Length: 317
Length: 254
Ligand SMILES: Nc1ncnc2c1ncn2[C@@H]1O[C@H](COP(=O)(O)OP(=O)(O)O)[C@@H](O)[C@H]1O
Ligand SMILES: [Mg+2]
Image (tube, rainbow over the protein chains, first blue to last red):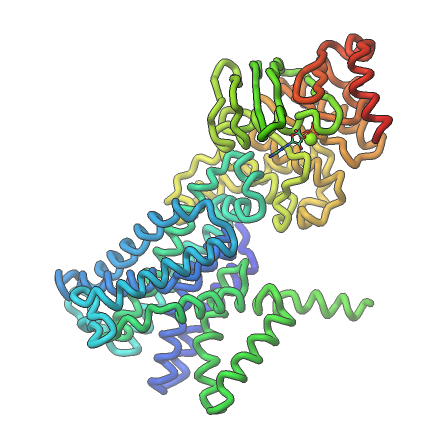
């Protein structure tokens, strides 16, 4: 039993996170780490959809919102134990992802992009207007502190570990998919749907599966976000977040789970770093993105992992 | 027996298949030849479920498969390759062939998500099986970890056959497998196909390479303009004037 380079890098990242958290006492930095991990869970979901199965989604914020509101409703209205409320939110999101996959399964590329974008917009309108359930844009909604069996675990240090466990689970499942026949079936569907069908892969079912698992992980991320933010409104679940998720995956790596995690941290941290540049924030951010995309078209992680090979080839030449 | 009865298919005004009936027995190479545009690939796409026929029936060992989806037809024991290669380009050669085994994997979805020891074990089995098939198709270990899309054309064709074999088919449809091969490679392919037929697989060989067909197939069906115009053993077919006219006419034109 051997581990792929993707697996090793993922494990290294998952180990590095608590180390980074232990090294800082700054509450703000710690919150950035936690938010980065929340984003990473969602990015891992989109990585399976887009990177493996080739199914682009511009509506991931909808699943994020379904997870967050599902969790909040379960916890606040029905007094469900927080961990179970998060699970319920994720399952709600998964059910919706699975049900939209069938009508979407005939669409490709930009048609799929448009359809998922429309889904995202519609869900945002629902989140903003179903005020009795979501609190809409104003006043929004809020959720009680995170706890397990009545034990309060809501400090940033404690939340760190809660979210970390969520990310470990997401990375474990996604890493397994990446290294077994499920992942290969998804890749097959992306590379040639005809050939995939010719070896007995049910293409429609494979797409339904990847929408379901992508929605599940993004919904899980939304549930974690609810306990992180405690009080939020529908603006968190707009198109902007869907685009950010897409940038995380494209920037990190389209073919590696570790890439999605790296991408998530870049997109979470860069705006914070560039805060110091004040007026040039957006510009600097944009330029950095363009540089990465130009020199590492298959993502930062693939680019860096491929660097030794490229350098030695250049040395020989 | 792979039994094809009275297949018809129209593309608008074009009658691409007219009452095509073909029998392909197990353990033999049955060839379908004919000039470009005769309808051979259309026949192949109809049999494998990628195009639905307007009429007619197809049975595999007595089981009707007409109207089934391509992945269901594969699960009935019918595999295929494509005239225009359909590779999993970014996979390695080995992964490509392992993917061909998908229909035989038994571990549950949950077991796969959790990667239980059973799944690890299955993975190893599938890799072993794929390696054997790659050897059968004369693709050496030095190629196994290469990106499938980077292989020379002739090798990609053989990888496609290995991938089809991985489904453990009772019948295999090959659409112009010798296209782009030189004479030597073509003969080697013929012997490999004969060996596969010897293992009991019924092979339907669609080919332009007349030598390959004449030397290696047991029975030949000749198509022209959507219909079967003649059939018989290589000797019988070679001497029929309508075949010479339809087929060699095209050869001279090409
Ligand atoms: N999907 C399609 N739509 C319309 N016409 C088609 C289609 N597929 C094939 N044809 C036409 O059907 C005829 C038979 O094509 P084909 O089966 O590819 O022939 P062959 O494989 O014998 O060269 C050709 O005239 C071709 O242009
Ligand atoms: Mg053809």
